[in-house]
Length: 161
Image (cartoon, rainbow, N blue to C red; front, side):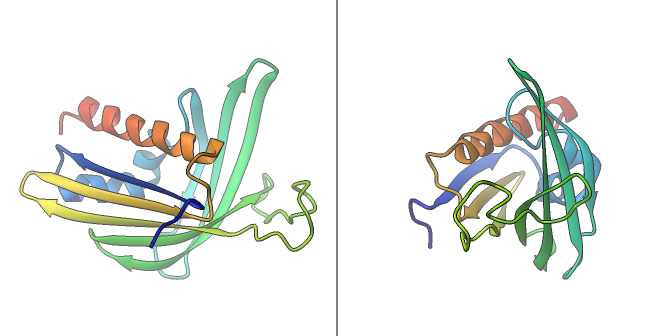
């Protein structure tokens, strides 16, 4: 179930399910598409196992210089090639989760969100539904996801899928 507090993107790619799964689970692939346009991913550490941790570093050029953001999380569900669920929280460069107070938000504000990726094989195509729970669809995070999925599609084209 999604609501306005969730980003939900559905896309059908002209690529096999194995490759779409790799885009989400292999650090080298992930680092090549994740983030909004203009972002780079200098850190992509991903232990894709239930209970495994992830630490992602993103750098975005802004008119005021480079902005760095870090995210950490834990893999909660893994059904190879069909379903991936992980948590995501803002973190510092060392991978320590940031509190609401550190983020300038009221104490007690939930800081952990979750990402659900569902894949379905459609012959030579793959249908993907990605839901980021706890991130409003009309937020900068929602816009960033839309750009990231466009970058994934471009990356797939570059790979000749």
